[in-house]
Each structure stands twice: as C-alpha cells, then as structure tokens.
Image 1 (cartoon, rainbow, N blue to C red):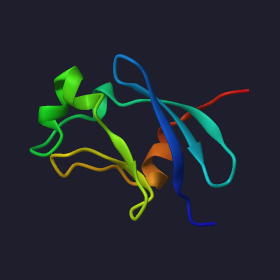
Image 2: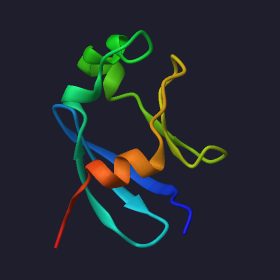
Image 3: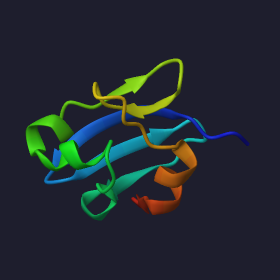
Length: 81
C-alpha cells in the first residue's frame, strides 16, 4: 500500500498528530529531524506550526519548500491505541 497523509494537526512543541490513508493515527515528534538547509528554518516553532497537508503530494509541507515523505512519518509515528 502506498501511504498518504490524510490529516495532520499541530499538538505541541514539534509534535504533530497524523492520520494516514490506511486508517492509522498517531503522533510524530520531529524535533530531532530538523537539520539541513531546508529544515533548519523550521526550528522556529512558529514556522514549524505553519505546515499543511498538500493534497497533491499527500504529505505535510511548509511554505519554504520543506516536506517529509509519508513513509518516513509513518515509521517515526507513535501509534495511538
């Protein structure tokens, strides 16, 4: 199955709640994933919180061009019971 992010909500700090097309939901903490040229600006929490789910890419994206692969997010996600 190809994974797609269907819904995402900011929770706190660098933690985002996600829902995937397979029905899985959970939280992902991205605090330690914000390195490299495109992700460094997202260490500013206000910029980080400004993500959205892109309907074409079907994952979370930021206005500066940063995005994260759905498969990476799924793997990092802490599944909620």
